[in-house]
Each structure stands twice: as structure tokens, then as C-alpha cells.
Amino acid sequence: MADDYYKALGLTKAASKEEIKKTYRKLALKYHPDKNPDDKASEEHFKTISEAYAVLSDPEKKKQYDTYGSQAFSQKFSQEDIFRNFDFSSIFSDLGFGGRRQQGRDPFADFFGGQQQYSRQPRPQRGNDLEYNLSITLEEVFSGADKRLTFRKGQETDDIQFKVPKGISSCQKLRLTSKGNPGVHGGPNGDLYINVTVLPHSLFILEENDIIFNKSISFTEAVFGTSIDIPTLSGATKRIKVPAHTQNNTRIRMRGFGLPVFKKAGKGDQFVRITIEIPRQLTDAQRKLIEKLSKEGL
Image 1 (cartoon, one colour):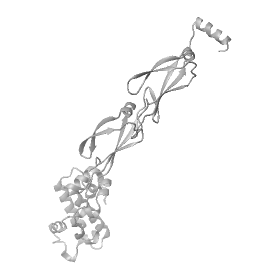
Image 2 (spheres, helix red, strand yellow; image 1 turned 45 degrees about the vertical axis):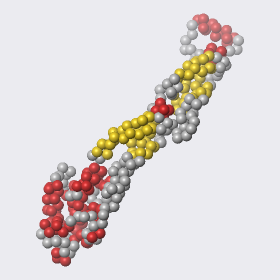
Image 3 (tube, helix red, strand yellow; image 1 turned 90 degrees about the horizontal axis):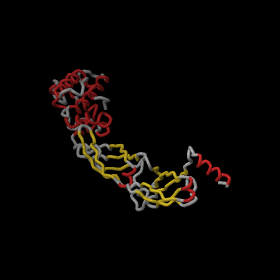
Image 4 (cartoon, one colour; image 1 turned 90 degrees about the vertical axis):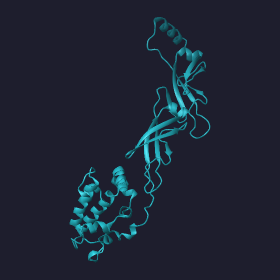
């Protein structure tokens, strides 16, 4: 298969149907095997330009080639597919060779095994899979989310709606069946894979299905205990108790306030990590009190 069918014919994508036909006729007349007997280089060039013309003269094959490019096209179409139903006799009759069997030779029989093998019905081929990178918030992981994508596929635009399930995590993929590139010759569409990334959160740290919230309290609150208000992913605020004598980096569990488990029942937990705030500056009165505490061994 040629790397670039337009280049093989010396044309650009903007070439019209008539320009493609005219250019091929000119090149085919120059490189036809009957005009260049025993010239292997001419035979190979004739084969290349004929393959290019077989694709670019067929509206459906040309559309597929222009949309998806040479590499994807070669995966969809075998050489048999390319030359199927290609009318050799009329082309070479127009060029003055008088039909396929003039001079006792069918030029394509040497290259492609003759026209007969290409008369079968085209084989259905599945379309290519596509991928899309999607970033979501921690709130969307908590509650699930309805998403809508306007997705460009070749020359067409597809509007796709889907649901992000609760509890999904980064690096997981969602498979949207039949939302990929269209199949060829009646083949099924490929699939669309959504690559999920969970964005960092301004308040919470994610640990699997658990979330961590850091909260600073004063030294006296840690000693005597206190009550504090804690935000949650649901948007509500939960008041919890900090027991007396709480140590620095203590974790207080809020059971069931974490993320849902992906495709399973249950939820993770939310942990409040307590840090004890040390004042950077003290008043004279505060300093005297702390000095007294120090003398008492605190």
C-alpha cells in the first residue's frame, strides 16, 4: 500500500474527480506493462498508481481515506478490498489497449491475481476504537455525574451523553459501546473509551475510598476537648467532638462519609486529622502563663 495515494499520483487533496482520472490515465499510459515489457520498475509503479486510483476514484473509499488517513485505512482495507469491483476493462479500453486480453495479457493478473477474486461482496470491518481524557471533581466521584461530549469523528460531529458512576477513580476507563469510529461495509462501530482523572481538591485528600480533612485546634482545645464543624463532600457540615487530651496528628473517624465503593455497596470514611496550632507570637500575659505551666512540667 502506498504511503500517500495523492502523492503517488502527484496530486493534492483538493484534486477534483476529473483531475484524478486525467492524471491516472496519463500515468497509466506511460507505465503500462505492455508499453514497458520486462521493466520491473515500471510494473511496480503501474501497480502503485493503479492502487491509488482504485481508492481515489471510489467515493466511499476516498471518504474513508481522507477522513482517517493512510495508516487507519490500511487497517480497514486489504488490497483485495481496494480492487474489488474496479473496472479494468473500460479503463484500458479507453487508453487504447483494446480490453483486458489484448496482446494475450491481463496486466492485473500478474500483480493481483486477476479481477475475478475481487468480485465478491465487501467484507464488513469493525470501526476503530477512540479514547477521550475526562477530568472530574471529587464531588462528582461522590455523587456520580451526567456528562455530555461533543466529539469530533473524522468529518462528522457526534453528541454523546453518558453517566460517570459513583466511586470511580483515576486511571479507570469507561467503555461506551459502539461510540467509536464507524465500521466499513456494514461492519459494527468501534467503542469509545473514557480515561478518567480525578482532580485534586482544595479541602480533602483522597486515600482510596477514604478522604482526609486537616483541622488545626489550639493547645487548650486539645487539652480540654472541644466541638468543631467539619465540611463533607455532600455539602453539609457535620459537628464532631474532639476529646480532651487529643494528641497532635490524631485522626477522628467519621464513618461512612467517604466515597462510594465503585460498583459495590458501602462507602469509605472521612478522617479529620487534628494538628495542634503553636502560636507564632505571644502576649506578655500569655508568656507568663506558659512559663508557669513550664515550671509545672507542661
